[in-house]
Each structure stands twice: as C-alpha cells, then as structure tokens.
Image 1 (cartoon, rainbow, N blue to C red):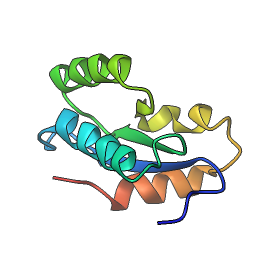
Image 2: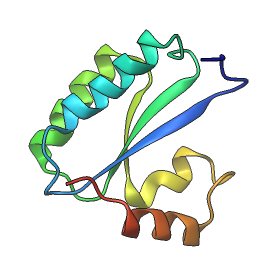
Image 3: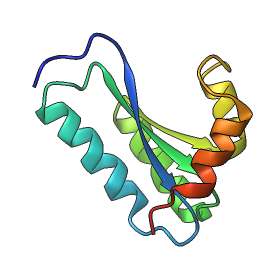
Image 4: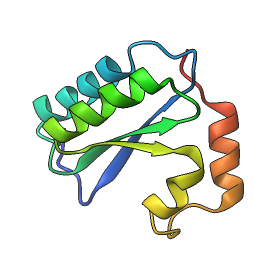
Length: 100
C-alpha cells in the first residue's frame, strides 16, 4: 500500500442506534496504524445523535489516541473550516449513510 500524499479522513457516521462506537473508532485507527498510515489518516465519528454514554467513551479514547475525532453533524463545517464541504454535501452524506 503506497503512502498517502496528504491527510485524509475516514468517516464513521453514527446515530442513536449505532452500537460499539468506541470499538469502531479504535479498530479503524488501529488498522491505519498497522498499515503505516497513522500519520496521514484521521478517524472522524460523525455524531448524528449518539447517546451521552457513547460520547463520553469517545472523548476518553480521543484523549488517549491522536487522530480520533467526534464531530456533531452540525459542526462538521467548522471542523473543516468550511473549505471542503458545502451544506448540501453535508446533508446528503448524513442523510444517506448510517451505520446501525
């Protein structure tokens, strides 16, 4: 697997029906590390209404490991400084892709 030319983001959209959010984020980050891509790849958990317990667990794991972020659906534009995503793209993405 060739190394990336720049940073990239792997999205894990999660809603209230998503289980094992922490494990999904950690295992994705671990896979990046095993592939030698941990300097380039970032894991973004897109919060589309996850439970408070899941949010607490994500906050803990994001403090332990670099490259794991939890971003609310409405804050994703600020996360990327509005450079990459238009509001229509954000809405389309969050409406269509849920992991349950």
